[in-house]
Image (cartoon, rainbow, N blue to C red):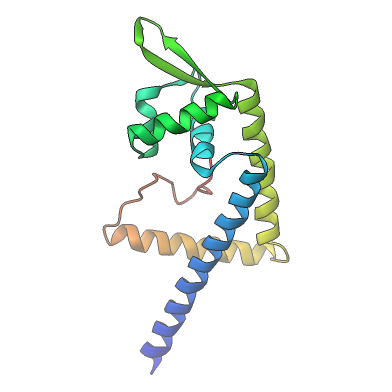
Length: 164
C-alpha cells in the first residue's frame, strides 16, 4: 500500500513539474514575442551575449545543437533586425564572426528583466524556506537522473538556474 502511495505521489510530482515547465515556457515565449523575436533567435542572442568578441558562424549550429541551415536562417533574421553583425574573421576571408550589436545587447537586457518578472510571478507567495525545499527536491531529481546515466543535453549545471 505504501509503495502504491509513493508511486502515485511520484507520478503527481512529475506531472506537476511538467505542467509548470510548459506554463513557464509559454509565459517566457509570450514575453519574447513582445520583443519581436522567436525562441530560436533568443537562444542565439543569449549565447552570443556570453561570447566576448563574437563566435564563428560555423560554431553557432554546433553550440546550439541545430542544423547549419536553421542557424543560417536564424542569423539572417537577426541580422536583418539589426540585432547581430557578421564580420569577416581575421586571417580568413571565408569565415564570418557573429557579434551582438548594441540593439542586440539591449534586447538581451530586456529579456533578462522580462524573465525575472515571469520567475517572480511563478514563485509569488512562496517563502524562502519553500523555495529552498523546492531547490533541494529538484536537485535530487536531477542527480537521480544523472546517476541513472541520463546526460544533460544542455550542459546545465544543477546548481545553476539553467537560464543564460
